[in-house]
Amino acid sequence: MEISQPKNQHAKIITVIPGEKSQRLRQEEECLIADGLQGFATRSGIAIESANGNIIRDIDGNEFLDIIGGIGVNGIGHSHPKFIKEMSEQLTKCSIGSFTSKARVDFFNIIDQIKVGNLNRVQLYSSGSEAVESALRLAKNATQKWEFVSFSGSFHGKTAGSLALMGSEFKNSYGPFAPGNHVIPYANCFRCPLGSSYPICGLACLEVGRNFLKSNITSGVAAFIIEPIQGTAGNIIPPKDFLSSVRELAKEFDSLLIADEMITGFGRTGHFWGVQHSHTVPDIMTIGKQFGGGYPVSGLLASNELVKIKPWGNPSGSSSSYGGNPMAAMAALTSTQIIIEENLVENSKQMGLYFLELLKPFVDRYSFIGEVRGLGLMIGIELVKNKQTKEPLSKKALNWLFDEFLQNGLLTMAYASSFRIQPAMTIDQETIINIIEIMNKVFNKFSDYGLVDY
Ligand SMILES: Cc1ncc(COP(=O)(O)O)c(C=O)c1O
Image (tube, rainbow, N blue to C red; front, side, top):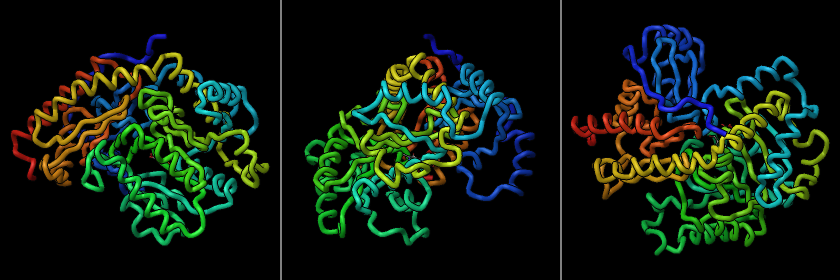
């Protein structure tokens, strides 16, 4: 089936950004909303009227090309016609409760067909963190152990258990956490923690992790948890054998492997699941973001044997108030159907390759672009002051880039030196060309103004 979203989408800017109407509404909200909203929403200052495909329209009539995509949520494109129809109809029928629905069964049947290994049993939740917390509880029940291993740069959510796994400074000031969380190095080869390079290193980072764990585990590891490709850290793609080696390491410690596929699942990386790039089968997978089409639904996948373990598997043992309610089930079913019917996994792969083909020359063209990488439509660009030292651009320079992209009609995550790109998987070549045109314009201006040392 043809992709139903519009093609050749362009930005259209008709006011200074943010426009007057947006400014007024934002000022009103500013007095009421608690601080801490997502940075790009606050900084952009725009208020949203509507959206379709890869375009977001503000209330002043400006149209932005959106390569943030709700940070991996926008798989099927904003306002997909089938999604609107099915969700609207569902709303008129029933929206509350955990009783069985036809949509939920149909969704589970699809998962059964596309499962990795024997991970065909599903429990649904409403946020990524909630699914991760459930995975941690299940791993504890299954192994009767309580320690966890995660990776530098990792992000698994902001609830207490998931926060303790975090591999970045964000968690500082929220401690103390439950004991027994160990963070070991991820294979972030652009910024190799050992100053080495792949494949000469022989995945030495994992060897460091192994030795660290040997002397730091006090009781036993319930599970290793890993993002097959790290999202928050900057769409970091480890070498192909990294994940399979982590699988081996988990076996060595007689523990489970949880693959957090919150961003990488449902075709984002050009395979249905991120773990398929390295032929690795985890014991538990957590899923979320784009299989809800914007509706807050997440989930956990595990084998038949694992989900029977008690008390996790007792009645109400792994449930939640909104998990798999009729709206969530319909959102999950409809988005997944669209991804399959419109062949969006293949489109993600092909459009990702096309995007990379146009972005790769940026490394030679611009002194401040240290690396361009990507798998499917999960793309990362390293913005650096100096290609030799790899020192990141300053916050001031990054904010300038974010603001300039915005004024030119491109919604980006250029406020971080590991600049992440994840448009809707419905994107086409012409829209990518339109995005690249704005990127070249802004990067050329950045060069001409000599802002690298800003
Ligand atoms: C890999 C990963 N796991 C978990 C989460 C947490 O999801 P949520 O924000 O829905 O709680 C995120 C959010 O970005 C994520 O990227």
